[in-house]
Amino acid sequence: MVGDRIYLRRIEKDDLEGNYFQWLNDQEVTRWMLNGIFPNSVESMLEYYQKTVTSSTAMNLAIIIKENDRHIGNIGLHNIHPVVHAAEIGILIGEKDVWGQGYATEAIKLLSAHAFYRMNLNRISSGAVVHNIGSIRAFEKAGFKQEGISRQAYYCEGEYVDCVRLGLLRYEWEMLKS
Image (tube, rainbow, N blue to C red; front, top):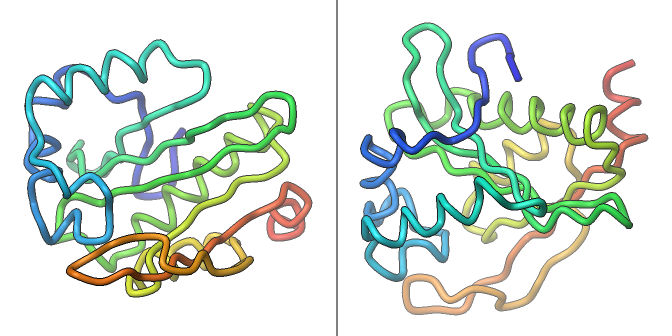
């Protein structure tokens, strides 16, 4: 999947040895994620990798800047449901020096197009802690709409916090493209 500034490709085993490993141990990167609760280990990354490369209900992709082939984050579809044609999307931009530059929005758009046109999905949903304004904004710029709030859905930094639920339907995506 190729965009203007980035491309998406399957996560490769070699990616586990790069900065990806440290992203999951960086408290600032994982601030609003469940991943940051337990320290990352080589074993847990290998186990996760093995599960996802053979999964029929998940797809994990590396986000690569075209200009320098730099791996800056990951994006994926999870809980892919072939009967109801729906999935959840999650994203992590691990390289902090590229935060706020629109790469997340571009990646979300690329994966959404793939989900709707190649996988025949009808609905993609996501969620973000209410304090994670950057993530919420990236999804909204990609066409997602806020659908509701899951109250006190996460425990972050010593408090229970709400989660914003976002969704995008295929017909809405098609309207954005026309």
